[in-house]
Image 1 (cartoon, rainbow, N blue to C red):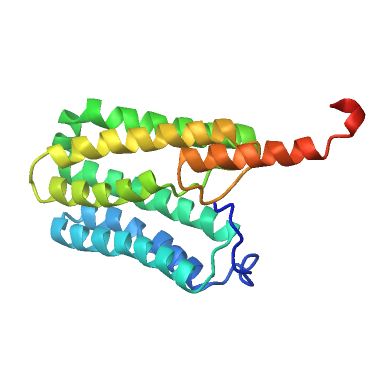
Image 2: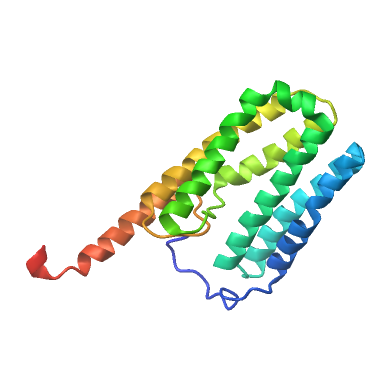
Length: 213
């Protein structure tokens, strides 16, 4: 979300855009992780997960470069992320269930706060939030590192650090939902949400008739 004047976006209401097609490919490809895990193919699993994760970075860049950002694209991107990480979790449970069981107390907070964020958005806006905050973008790289670390039997600390970061990211999303009166896509930080809320309230105040002030 940017309160400054933006370049007109002719793609804003279109569904078939380059970034959206990439998101759809990611959604279709994510269940392949579960198949690879079921056939006990950890290296292929890692390679596929990395490629799918990088596609998330690519579609975000293309959306900005091609000026093809849209509300539908933001929602689709959030859905594709949820599908990818759900398939990642299921696949890791199949391949590295013993490791995840040992790290259960680290995994619980990000899962619960994610459910809290989605549930609050559905309750308030009748749709899940799609903020794509700076913290979420950082967490994206951390999840990538943690997934590779767990799957290749490296240290568990990348996973633990990622769990803390994702938990904080989810809590920020809850705060953003708390302060924004209407659904907004691509809100960079909680500070940006406060700024938008302040501007909106000021605009509403200006429209109040003088005899009601």
